Length: 90
Image (cartoon, rainbow, N blue to C red; front, side, top):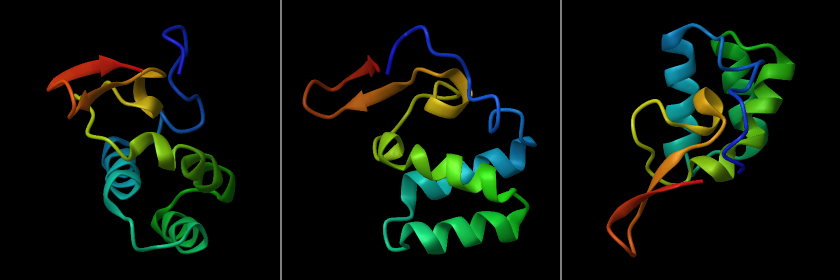
């Protein structure tokens, strides 16, 4: 991801609790397939377009991020690098 990216306009404006749920599922739900996760997001109140956009970020959320510096909220993210023990800007 480029440092010049902006927050995702379709997802970053979701209500805080809903965005936190989306990011939690993207970070932690390894057992559900994309279809199941999409349906879950829609059931929680996302539109189909928002749910499908969220799934595009799934691989970017496989690492721990620092605070609100996440791919959806900030465009770029600060994530933990277990090899170095530091946080990297991605």
